[in-house]
Length: 133
Image 1 (cartoon, one colour):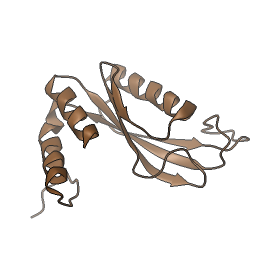
Image 2 (cartoon, one colour; image 1 turned 120 degrees about the vertical axis):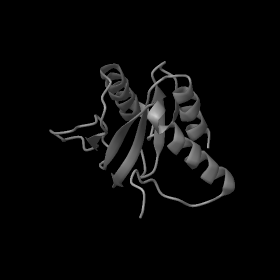
Image 3 (cartoon, rainbow, N blue to C red; image 1 turned 90 degrees about the horizontal axis):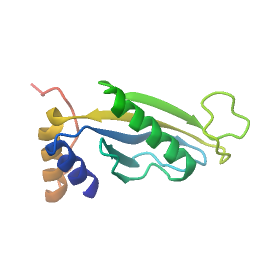
Image 4 (cartoon, rainbow, N blue to C red; image 1 turned 60 degrees about the horizontal axis):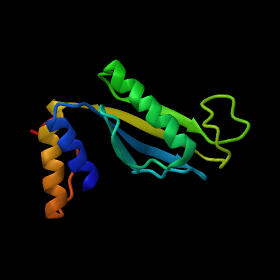
């Protein structure tokens, strides 16, 4: 819940936020599917996508995307094999993961309100930008 209220507060203050979500994790990897981290434009952040050097590198990537004002989600693949030549994370835990970087701004406040309400009420739900007929 703290993550969602953090994001909501930052958006209400006029900041942008990058939401990082581990969308896939295979083998031995520092972050598991569903781990989340939010970085605000002021440099404050909450959550984790696994910690360590990999998380630090991904925070730097998120800060770069915030500075650039990247308007669309970005998917980053991290290969945690010591002999990796592509997408090498610098770790040697022998797994891999995909991290989605999702830019959030004031337009997403109503979605955040619905997420927070659902969590508070213990309701299950899903995120979908299109309304069902």
